[in-house]
Image 1 (cartoon, helix red, strand yellow):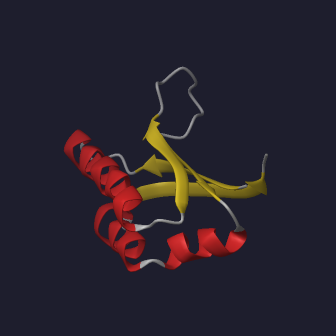
Image 2 (tube, rainbow, N blue to C red):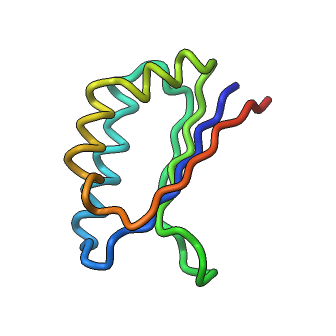
Image 3 (tube, helix red, strand yellow):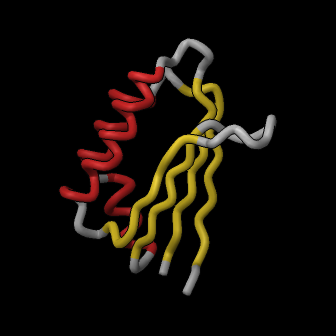
Length: 98
């Protein structure tokens, strides 16, 4: 199993409505990208001051399946329309898991 984890810090002017729209956009990807095996995402609960604001964790059978997701037009549209220009920071890691 191949896991993709990405964390975001939103710009200070990003609204709750914009974050909700980003969440809905991410949730919709599961319906159109069959290579996604498991997909979780959500807001940080605010326990730590240095935490990122939002996380996405996606599981795929292989690196190739992840690359299909990464490059899929629906995913690229979510990035362009709901994330681009709204992020102060982004960090990601991919790793193999059981």
